[in-house]
Amino acid sequence: MTQDGRSKHFWSGVSLFCRGWLIVFCVALNTVLIAEGSYSKSAVTGFAISMLWFLNARTAGQSQGLWGAFWYALGAACGTVSGAWFGHAWH
Image (cartoon, rainbow, N blue to C red; front, side):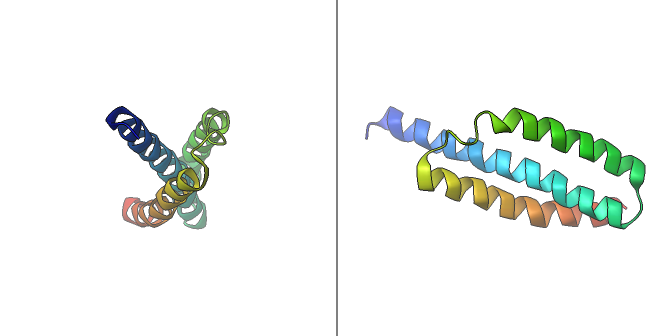
């Protein structure tokens, strides 16, 4: 693989990680907000989840096979922890 190919592959993985993180961060945050009764904040977060999901659905399936799934799932795992933490800290 050429240097340009490795660079493109790397940035594609970073993009998948960030998308997985952002979507699941919002879902975890929204779960905490609903559980704590912050309904106005959860409405805003729910809107963000739907927008992100709609925009991501067109491109997430066109990933890099197993490595793409790995980076997306790793981002989702980090999003779970950071979204739940932020939800408790924000309240």
